[in-house]
Image (cartoon, rainbow, N blue to C red; front, top):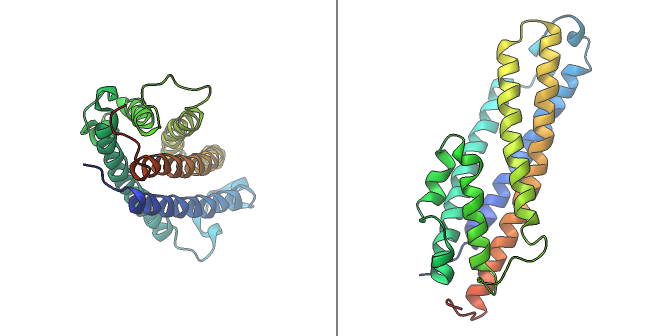
Length: 212
């Protein structure tokens, strides 16, 4: 049975936009630290002004978790729809559209394979060969997302080990790069979500046969 993913896609896009807002905000704070006098002698959280950083980071983390949850629900719904149109093209069961995200290391490649299967099932001719650069949007988003995960871990470890001004500056630079990459990944994710949702909506409402 097909289920409409449009409402979930709107929620995902809004949440991703919210994440981008916090990336810009927290990135600006990192820049302010890098170009402040405190970077030359010691790390002083007060340089960020009256903004309560604990609140800002807590809100950003909460939004990040909410985005992940809603995205996975959307992703699972599209995977269930793909089962109707081309179940034999799906290399993994629908449950993997949820579980695949929580497998260490495996989450760097399993969901991407599921997304490609969903994409093929959602196009007009599921069994046709992939067109030139047809999966370019998916691949670009996935590379940026995976790289962002790696950058986040590196910057977190650098901050954890930092005990000098130079070490904090280095960690801040890596963190800033992570925010930038996260914004790019979020933009690509929005484009991917909108495109794949539109493909399924068009197929479901355009009377395209479920089996071709």
